[in-house]
Image 1 (tube, one colour):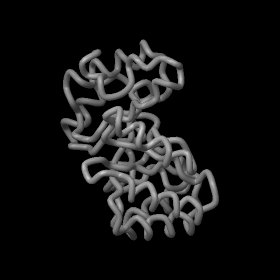
Image 2 (cartoon, rainbow, N blue to C red):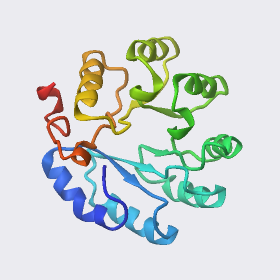
Image 3 (cartoon, one colour):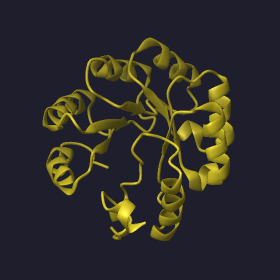
Image 4 (spheres, rainbow, N blue to C red):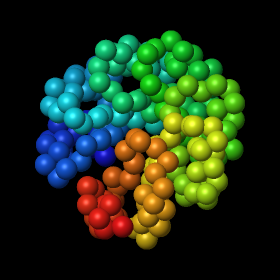
Length: 202
């Protein structure tokens, strides 16, 4: 996780040095044009082997999302997460159809039933699944195996103990080739379950 705004540019080299390969940057926090400039600077500093995800947390309206997605169309972005509010389902489907950028649902799919519903609607993008909210990993694993859903397993700000239990189960049987979204250990001041050494620790 990179901090919002220009602080991301200072945090990126430190995270790269620590061995991180996938980064999420929160957007929709500052002025749109300012963030677009920072975004270009981030991409210029990002090595070719690393990936960048953008997470708007539903902060954009349809016009803002369109401007961002047009800007991202020819840039190496893994996906853009929750570009508009969960309630604006027509906009989410329209944006997914209108732009070549991969989109991901997060707040729209807090439970597995919601993810199944979106899949039934033909959602073409990624599902960000928080096991602590979505349900048992056995059920998530069965859904992924049956439907080949494209998922990212993500934290819901669990305690270190809860996060470790989820990660131990997830790493025992990988459900996705995408990087896990669990880079939040410092929120609790406990880095034992965070970062590149995670696999060895678990």
